[in-house]
Amino acid sequence: MTLLDLSVSLSFVLGVGFLAYVAVIVRTFLRARPDATGDPARFDWHFLIPCRDEEAVIGTTLDYLDRHFPEAHVWVVDDHSEDRTAEEVRARADAGRPVHLVSRRLPRARTGKGDALNAAYRALEAWLPGDADADRVVLTVVDADGRPSPGMLEVFAGPSFFADPDIGAVQAEVRMSNRDVAVPLPHRGRLANRFARLLARLQDIEFRGPISAIQITRRLTRTVNVGGNGQANRLSALRSIDRGGGEPWGRALLEDFELGLRMMLAGWRNGYTTTAWVDQEALWNVRQLITQRVRWAQGSMQCAPYLRRVWRSREFSTLGFLEVLYFMVQPWLQVVGLVVYTVPIAAFAYNAVFYPAFVLAFLRQGGAVLIAFYLVVGVAEFALWGPLYRRRSEPGISRRAALGYGLALAVYAATTYLVAIRAFWRIVRRQGSWHKTARTAEPLPVPAAQQAGTAPEAAAV
Image 1 (cartoon, rainbow, N blue to C red):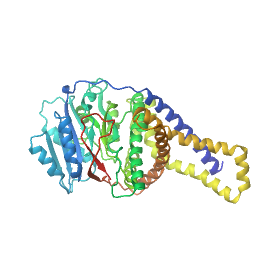
Image 2: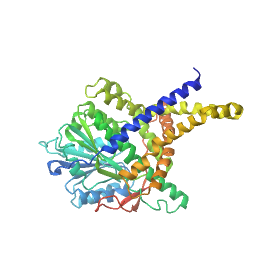
Image 3: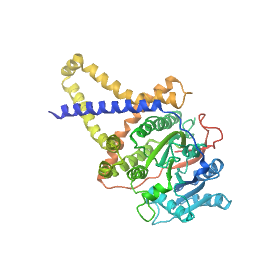
Image 4: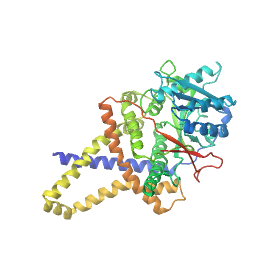
């Protein structure tokens, strides 16, 4: 078998496998129903916000949380900020609000988000009375620009989530707060603004479409995992995976996935809901977006050693193991996929230049139909999320716009191959640095679909 034959065969297998996976998650996505709510007074609520140079947004975030969740305590970790982040936090604590500042200074600071969250965890543990019921204490992680939906705590307190003693963590759906901004880049031209708007919308589709569908499907395999924003954890569950010294969070670049995985290995179940959500800022810059996704892909690759423990664990069914396996090998498959998809394309282009008669004969004898089929299926697997997004999330957009967003998502998805290669190269070079996403303080309009009473959002660059 030649390299070309092998590449074509592998590309076919990967394509069919991915198509089957998409069919499964779309089915569960369309069948999902709202989650029942509960009484949040049964629990003690705490928000954890890791910060580094977040002066632009932390003040409005604290004001928002105070307005909508006055019963909750807020723990802000200042990871050696060089701006007025700490001053913004102290001002609200001095005003009598339940806001706590946890300061980290170099050389112990800026060592990763996991370490920052561990610092907040230790401060909270020291603050809690000795007789506190750890099963009733819930720690919710939000970003400095995060906006939890006003009814989030009622949903988290529901029978499918923390009212169930087996639930260790819950992840809320993530939405992009700046998806409806008309002029995201006021100092740039019309084309740059149109592209920035499209990029923000595609991130919203990504999180509320395929990512949400994957999480909903994971309910069936009991492998729901948590993200970095809108992640809620039961204190007793965190204690059960504490490495000792107050470190339930690990140091992988994808510390949230690692945490959720360790929760499941310890016997806890994780929940996911679309009835509650958290708004965050979409990125308007491709370079920053790729840097963010490279960090995520590399973090997933760093978690590969956990596969042996998942394989041996009785907490995971065979189907659950396969789901975790698929997620964790995805970046590696994309590295392989870049090769197996590139080789046939390169071979076709070579033959088209040097052997045009052969290529024409191939196309006439069914090759054109085969290529068209590959293209249609390959694009449709991503393009369908545009119409599904309109149906489930944003009915106000037109059918034409939804189809256009779906086609754009297919192009957007192609960047994952570049992301996987860069993440792999960083692994090879043993680079583990963490890059922070910049923000601005420009106010954003409240999206039409958001519940009444939410605060103005902050913009991202």
